Image 1 (cartoon, rainbow, N blue to C red):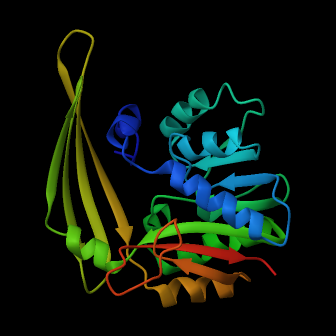
Image 2 (cartoon, one colour):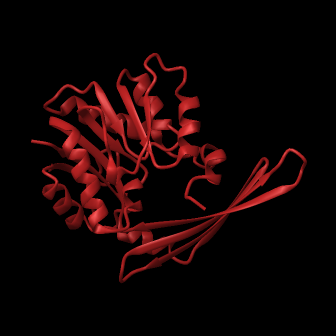
Amino acid sequence: MIAYSALAAVYDALTGDVPYEQWAVFAQKAFAKGKKPVKLVLELACGTGSLTRLLGQAGYEMIACDLSADMLAVAREKCGELTCPPVFLCQDMCQLDLYGTIDAAVCCLDSINYLTQLRQLKQAFARVSLFLEPGGLFLFDVKTPLAFEEMGGLSSVEELEGAFCAWQYGYDRKSRQAQHQVDVFLQEEDGTWSRNTEWHEQRAYTREQLEQALQQAGLRVRHVYGSPGGQRVGEQTRRLFFVAEKP
């Protein structure tokens, strides 16, 4: 089953502890320090639109892109009350195609790790660079190889009202390929339960690989942090936050 199809209905309930507010503050601080005033922002892999809504509420015009039509449907409803409704696009980030240029782009919650081939990573970065205005910023986070190593072999379950989800995680250290299976059980109106299984694949990239791919796309790394609050990167860092700029 396509990733984030069945999960779309329960995704927000499962991610209630995700610090979207911290990510929004991180983005706004980076925008304020950039060379170019930021008005129009693209969010890649926007999911259910939580960050899209926060940045829209902060006054930015938003373009929200995701490969899952089901996630976009939730995002559209969530952002419906914004003064300036976002433009929603169902697109693969490797084939990003916009109507014009943007002032900044963001991609949160390790969505970049879903690009499982190095050529896909380079393609996605090149597409973002193509549509960024000179001086525009590209912000994203990734899980480090350490984070994936720690998850390999684990399993977890979560029970919600009318839903039950089970995860099984795998990771191959040599190829840095990660897989996790998600079984989503949803209670139907007649009381019966339906089961949907999704298969998610990710890849862990080193900092050097990411910086090289950005450079090849014509983007310059300005900062790399270990948290949205600006923590320094260390050996035990499990998530990297990049701020790149188009010269």
